[in-house]
Length: 357
Image 1: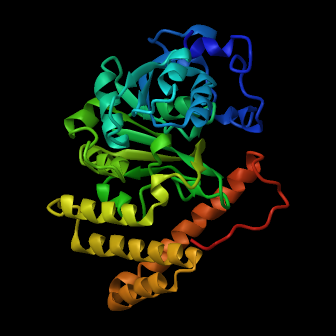
Image 2: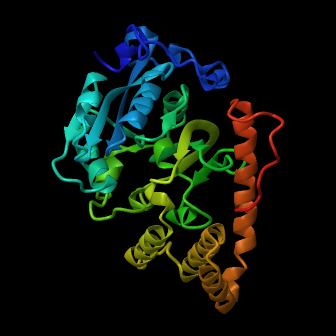
């Protein structure tokens, strides 16, 4: 049974989810099949588009099934292939993905998400575009259609996302209600990488011509690839929320030490690029110092807090960027609360947005 056929199959995987965010909230993203003339329609009236979905996974069967269900629930358009890269789970993950009808790449050795995504990208020979989805995230029903409609003239396009899981909701992506065209890789260094992996779609040929995903990078491997892709064309960040980003303690992005080390590595890797200016490096280091301070404060680590403050004190020019960063993230926090209320994730009487960023 294919992913597409799960929509009409009996049992819990057969029907679209009854969750509130699978309702009509996304009618603004709907359009008729006539706007996609020249392509073949898939069953259930959806248009098959030359997009392969890459889902790297490692021992997260429960989350993976939710991710696959969110693909099956896509409206109007449907990917030509779904590739699940099982990074040596050894727990039946491959069998689960195969039962859903996905193409499965079962790895014998765990090499990390960078290598897994690279394997998937090179295997998707029939696709022109690659859509990313982490195994613990979920697409909203209009995600793929929204990105497909807005892809023209760009090498990558992404929707916005909202946190689910731990902590207050936060938006990722566009900080305002307007789409943003990204013309330089430097925009992803400061104020931050706004292309959430699971909300991003990019041209396969451009990614491969840029070297694909670096198999040796285990943290921030997505940012590493985005920087090289954006050297070859523009990207588009859409304000429409099309993805849920799950926050939980097992995420590598919550390992501050590893993420900081990876960012420093990227600064060195691209130090010879014209867009990686000394000023941009200072701004990026200010972001790291501020994030280290916030993480230390959350953990009650006074010594680490003092180290971060001391660094900012020694670099007053960089410290001037912190208010800009704070204002930018405050906008994202406010957007996150507003979108979470709109989607029914929190009540309208919930406390106002936490502006600590």
